[in-house]
Image 1 (tube, helix red, strand yellow):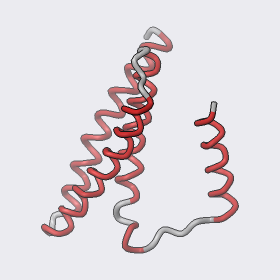
Image 2 (cartoon, rainbow, N blue to C red; image 1 turned 135 degrees about the vertical axis):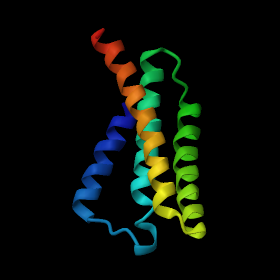
Image 3 (tube, helix red, strand yellow; image 1 turned 60 degrees about the vertical axis):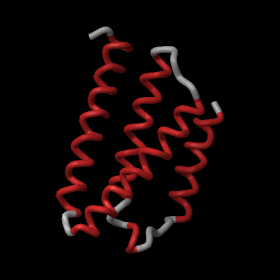
Image 4 (cartoon, rainbow, N blue to C red; image 1 turned 180 degrees about the horizontal axis):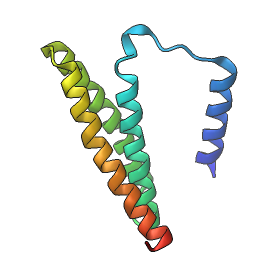
Length: 110
């Protein structure tokens, strides 16, 4: 319940304050969002499988975002930022769709 309230408060604050992302962070934001979505869908899957642990979720959430951002930073430093960003998006997308499929099967039995 606290998580849901925090989500609603975060959305309202974002809509009211219109936060700006600094230019140097803009290439990393989409990757961080996809990594966070991966952790959220993994957490939902664990919750419905009755193996959810909040500590594991928080560590997974932070670790996914940090590692994804570091991979994009490394790609930028090596001059292959676009290719590495695409690879990260593809891998995380596969994980997200796998978790979404497991959730669909669990919830709807199809």
